[in-house]
Length: 319
Image 1 (cartoon, rainbow, N blue to C red):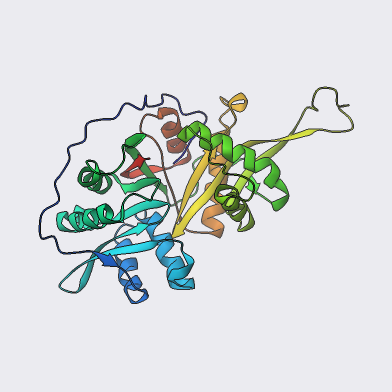
Image 2: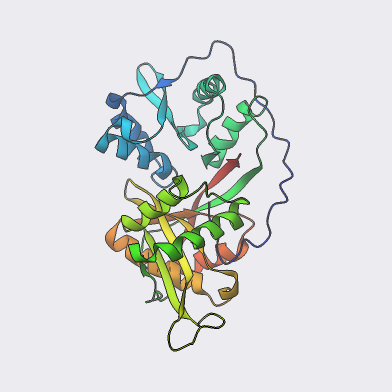
C-alpha cells in the first residue's frame, strides 16, 4: 500500500457487489508446502518477478533461513505431482496463480474457508486476487475496502529526473523521527493506526527496515519550536520517506512513500523517488517496482516522470 503527496481522491468505502463464485465440489486439495517444495515455488515466481515479489520475498527467506523463520505458511496446489500455484499466508495473503488457474483458486478457497480469515489483506495481481475473493466473499468477514485498480509500475534504468541529494539511507538515530512519519503515512493511507504499543509488530518492522538499510529519508532542520531559542535548538523533521518492503528475484518493491502535508506541492516525491531508484538499483536490485492506487493520478504522474512504467495491475482486499 502506498501514499504519495496526499492520497488525492479517496474511496468512500462503499463496497462494490463482487460476484461470488461457488467452489466446485470434489476440488483437488491444496496442501501446506514443505521445504522441498520451495524451489518449485520460486520458479513460479520467476514467471512474473514484479507481480510476485511479495510472495517471492517470503520464499527466498524460507529457503535461506528455514520455514520456521517466516511467520506464516505456503499453500500449494499440485497437478500430476507438479506445483501449479501457491499462496503465501501470513499477515497478508498473496496468491501466485499463473494464468489465474480456476482449479487452483478453488483449492485455495477451500483451504482458506477451512482455516478462516487470519490475514489483514489479500494482495497481488488483480485478476487473481479478485477471483479468489469472489470465492471467499460469502463466508469471510466483510472487508473495509476493495482496491481493485492499483497500477503495478517498474523501472529498470536510471531515473529520468535528478535525484534529491538529501535523500539518503536512514540511520538508527533517525528512528524516533521516522516512526511517527510511518504511522502518519499508514493512518492516511489505510484509515487506522497500526500501533499496538511500544515494541509492537509495526514498530518492530520499521526498526528492522531502518536497521537493514531498507529505509530512505530526507530529514531537514526546521525552525525551533515555540519558546525555544532558535540558536540553541532546531527541530528536525522528515520531509520525505520511503522503504524497500520486499526484495526477491532481482526486484526491489518500494512501499510507504510519503511527504508530510505541509511540504506537498514542491515535487519532493519526484526527486525523492529518483534518489531511491538510484540507490536501490545500485545497492539492492536492478529492478525497482511499486504499486499505487489508480485514483491517485498525482502519484502516477510523479512516478511516470521518474521513469516508472506500468507492467500490470494489483488489487488489495483490506479487512
